Image (tube, rainbow, N blue to C red; front, side, top):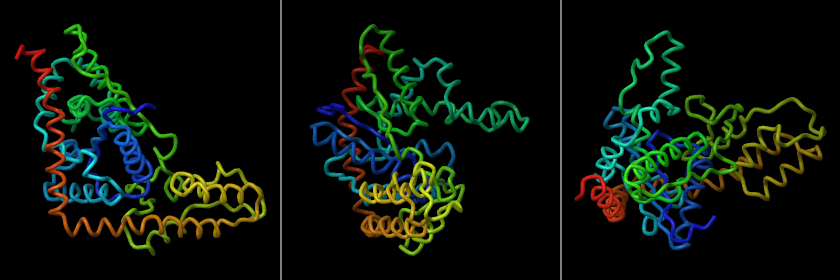
Length: 339
């Protein structure tokens, strides 16, 4: 992929305590792609989507705290705020004006087919409730706000998980609808980028790694708790000497998503040949994971203790983001209002 001079943007919702599934599926690949983009002379924007969080979290102190934790998490994982444009969604008024404009060019059918809305309706139907019970317009219009997040900066690429690809496709459809009305390219059409591995990292019980399942390996915790989680990964009762298909072994699936290629290759060979026990693999993985996470945890503790510095980084990032947003919004305003 040619990232020369391109704009790569990704947004993250404040969701609480992070785990290695978040790290593998979102944080690490986003930062890696951002570094590649910036090395090629492009712009990398990463924002905390605090307004998106209002769909499910209306506890102001809690929202403020998990936003704080999320900012420190990305910095601890290697985001460079001097190079990347790192900011809060709520600090960019241009996004909300763009949202209002885009609403007028978005067919209602686009929103009806959005996964989040359809899932909420399906839950209501299953419970025998009216289709739209408990569904607010923030949820229904979620894809429009996301489209504004993407389009306001002239983004070329948006790294997302497979479950978020539809939102980028809807964004492209909205931009295309506006462009079609005026017969020219007013808004750039973005494209989604997904990762081969890591989009959904299995948890220690084999299901998707999720705090709601209680099956996570923590990202910011004591080494003993990380090792305990790894040692709890579900295994089968096959004999130690039986050759195994690594793809069918949960330990290997988790290792492939997180651990270094050399360790993954060693585990793969040990499983294929037989003779390498699950306990041995768990010990190897626990040590490798704890070693990789130790410096990340140390940085996280530092940023949390010096959050005033983080706040300055976010404000500086917002100023840079607004400079990128201004010409895009001015072009849209001139097109739709003649200003």
